[in-house]
Image (cartoon, rainbow, N blue to C red; front, side, top):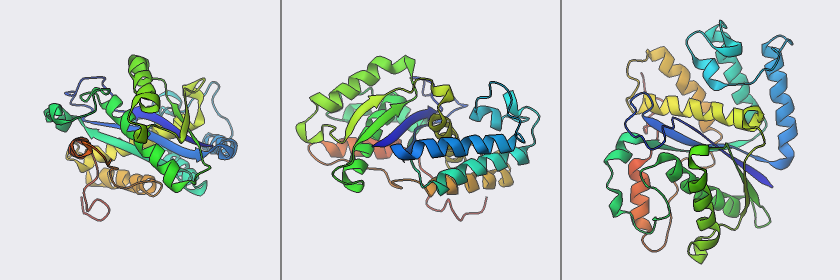
Length: 284
């Protein structure tokens, strides 16, 4: 069994004009079920080493605490250098454990400007709501990856960080994709959709949150939303993204085939957010 985690960052519901978060990203960590326990144990070791074997009581890992100017929560007052090292240690854990990652990013300004009336056969999705667009897209990508890359006996479970504001819409999309869509497009290799018991304490959700945050910040840099960032800060986020990029299952947008799919593919290509072609070598 493979687990596909779905978390998000930069979500403002249906608001596409929030200037502070111009990019939305959803996705997360991908791993086999037997890899969960060891990764959880190694993650706890990294956290313990960071706090010199004296982890604060009731500690929970929150990405936002790491990235505020002077640190917040249990990271308050910690040096940026130490916090960056912790980030690298967690990214290196993902790499060493050979876990994978995937995301779908949306540029909200592009989505806001897009004429979605052109898109056909997608009536079951709100095409102006980033979370729901991304959720539907990720189901397609995860189903394809499970079927084509993991072998005919492989099966998968999607685990979502609970999103109360869209719970009914998520359930509706899931039901449609499993039972009501065209037979050839129905989900078969993803056999279950679930929510974690306590997402704030779920190690894989916490790691996913970090990967997604790093992705979003770099996409904002690459798409011109953070031009005021110093060059050295841009380089730091690029170095983080290199490690994230190394674990992607797909590095291009996944398209669909079949009747009217070209309208949907144009839409996805038109609203997605990706790094520029020269992201890995350009000078900031």
